[in-house]
Image 1 (cartoon, helix red, strand yellow):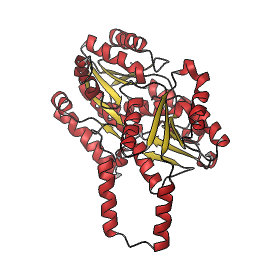
Image 2 (cartoon, rainbow, N blue to C red):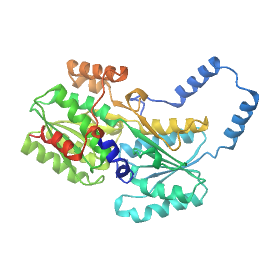
Image 3 (tube, rainbow, N blue to C red):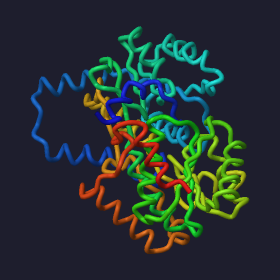
Image 4 (cartoon, one colour):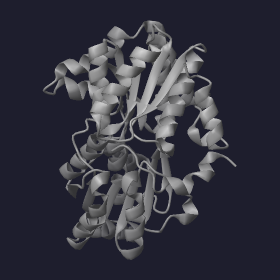
Length: 388
């Protein structure tokens, strides 16, 4: 039995990280165009069905509460929130509540209950809030709950719950290739905020991509133990550079990831961002110089996925009691390919990444996933084999 089955229930309580145009994905404009094309080609619906669809659309309660720990991470949470911004622009009443980090977890449920009492129909949150959302789904059967960045065996999912999961291993594989291609010391690092199956899937893809590009590469994997401690992350990276000679660093760490960028700026080494286009975020920030170490970011288009989900809900096609997995084919993951990336990554490395991209899209290539391991010990052996 593979880990995908073994950890599916554990995923429901796992902590995870909390829309950029660079990675593509479905936008309001592309969705509208697709709908117009469909109208031109599909057969006319029966009048009764048309009237029913109109009634259903008119009756749709377009109120969403988005639950997030803290905004401002320039990564996962901000990506999700940008999707809410798109929905607001389309007429949804999309309220976002910041409930704080794990030190305030005893207040999370009360905060969600408050917005349910205010009359919000949909509650949207990442895997950090899975346990609470599943509990409330049972207590509030007339409400609907969307849990992103998590998974559960479908026979265990309530009727009023939908899961969205991402193939982060695919995007991580390609930036792993790049990291191996850029390294001059032969040692690279992937540092995470906390360990859980989704995060280990980032790590698995990154390590496999690096090793496939350069079988001699060494990869350090570090864990900070928090999504909100950049100082700890900075010290971890500095020690990895000093003690192990790591010279390319990939962060999957939420707010802690800022410390990795600071360390890379101090060290004069390359950094890889995550979830959002972190080069663009920092270039427009009060610290634009930090952008100049972020050679690319592995994109996880959370915002796009939430917009697409609620578009499907408007169309009566949302997948409740299901896990929807989104990867490269759905433009839900990828990497930033901008002028800075093109100027600083050698052509042969970029070509290899593009070749991998094409192979995944065509189905010629399947990227190794954490959920492919039969047991945790096998995953740990996988990491141990590439440790310096």
